[in-house]
Amino acid sequence: MHEKISRKKRAVSALLAASFLFAAVFAFSACGGPDLTEEELAVNDDAVITLHGLGEEDIELSVADLKKLDSVTEKAEANRSNGEVVSVDATGPLLDTILEQYGAEKSDFNTIRFYAEDGYSIAMPSDIIENSDIIVSYYDGGAPITDENGPVRVVVTGQRAMYWVRMLTRIDFETGTSSAMTPSSLILLDSALPQLTEQNITVNGGQVQAVSTYDLISAYGDIDDNTIWNAYLKAADGLSKNETKQNFIKSYIRTSGEGAPEFTGPDLPEGMTVRDLVTIHYGDTAFLSLNRYLQSADEQSGKALFSDVLKEIGSMTSDVYLFTGSDGTEVQYTYDDIPQASVFLDSAGNAVFDPGNGDEAVTGLLSIEAVTREA
Ligand SMILES: Nc1nc2c(c(=O)[nH]1)N[C@H]1C(S)=C(S)[C@@H](COP(=O)(O)O)O[C@H]1N2
Ligand SMILES: [Mo]
Image (cartoon, rainbow, N blue to C red; front, side, top):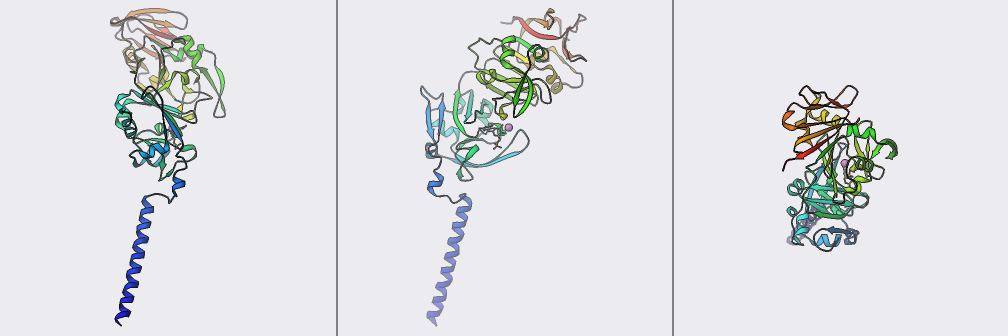
């Protein structure tokens, strides 16, 4: 009798132990992601990313190297430009942790640019660098990141998916201050683009009409200026991008259809295009789409004060400005003499400068130049 009970007891406790073990294993695998062997977890260990700008020489970091650093695991979501949601459960070191190894920190840099295997690249501006967790992830959902997404993906919590660079190959750390935001001349794209040769280019299998940025800069900017490294693009929805000169110069501006003017090109990955361009800054030349600017800024009056246009393109401060029309007309005004000056599009779509003092307007306004710059 006694023996029987104790045998039963033993059976019960064995069952309890087994179910406890089962539950524990189940719970473990549920939070640890898929059950993968060491070998399966290590498939990408030899993949390498390059860090440029942290010292004299470039640094090569393998996935195996990344795994040796303290890591975080975060579930994150981001919006694609088309409204869809990208979600990940990312594991990897924070960019801060990587930088720490080299005695650097995020705030040392003005811009950090990420490059991918497929030609995609994006510059991250300093406000995003400062205010977000940047995870250099090697696992998604506890498993190595495959195909189009990996082996390494940048995940920037709370920021647009365009910063979540898949197939990461290289990170450039740039220290130079962002120059170029104080132009000395402004070109109106509304007048400039029609003067240049339109080309038929193929983008995503479709034909579009576009003007090459090389032609645009050759005609209105300084194509031979070797001190220019970047172009700055701003769109009607507030999106701003910093593009390498190299990528900028080999691309195009689509001139018609929805979303025009659009920065695009046959060789530009889809995610790098910028629709509804309002401004482009290239060296000390600024380009403005008056059409897009008026739509985004002040639909009611249909015109913009000259002083607001100056603000939009960055402080192009001067005592005197020269206004030039496509037909060669030139007028010059002292800033203080034209407080009511405005620009607008006439019914034929021509950009017009109205000095607002009773003088004749300039129709087909092509450029505005700062003649005497304030010291
Ligand atoms: N390598 C690479 N990464 C990229 C892109 C790309 O074209 N190539 N597109 C970016 C853009 S614009 C978006 S919206 C997201 C889309 O994320 P998904 O490809 O996971 O859907 O990836 C970003 N990362
Ligand atoms: Mo995107």
